[in-house]
Image 1 (cartoon, one colour):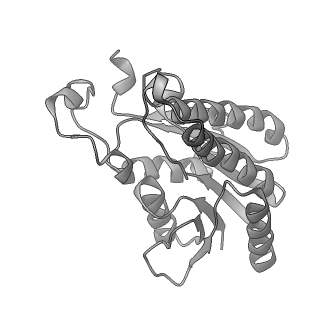
Image 2 (cartoon, rainbow, N blue to C red):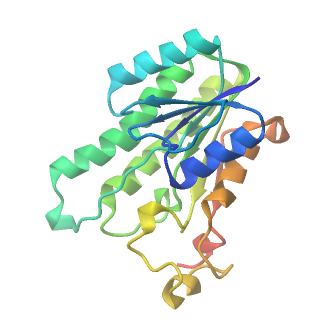
Image 3 (cartoon, rainbow, N blue to C red):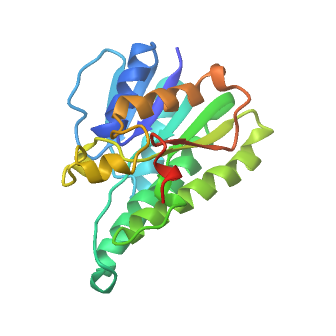
Length: 232
């Protein structure tokens, strides 16, 4: 049985990703600061703040001791804090960067010690890693950093038989976007497919990139945005 570690599996894209791996008979290990809220014989939860390097190191050591391997790592955990440029709090800036960018780095650094040939890594970034906007500076910058880090690791790990790819979601109906009316005409007009995406639609792409069905896809960022990137 293959073992997948998913960060941020409590809700949104992370929760949908947990479901799709469970449905495909994986042993799923979730790292999150909150309980997953679901029960399954092949689901194991660790309370883990990924911005804490020491905690991440200990958790991955425990996972390896328990299963003697890690086949797939999905970096899905992310937070955002919206603030105008001249109102940015350095505390908030550091919190977002520390969680999203440093946290992903810590998980990558530890998990890749245990991934064997044939393993896979998928990082969840954002279309805003490349498409600039205002008032979400630390989030977008952290996602841009994750995207580049993923591509550089693809160079590093490819010859070891480990594939690394990124998924860049667009406007997705998740708890992170609860303050936005995703059904508004303004939003829909910016998405050629005419609606916001669902977490499950992103999870399917994440799963695809984790399996042998994508065995020759490596070092890329797949955009899952209903065509949002086509409209400026």
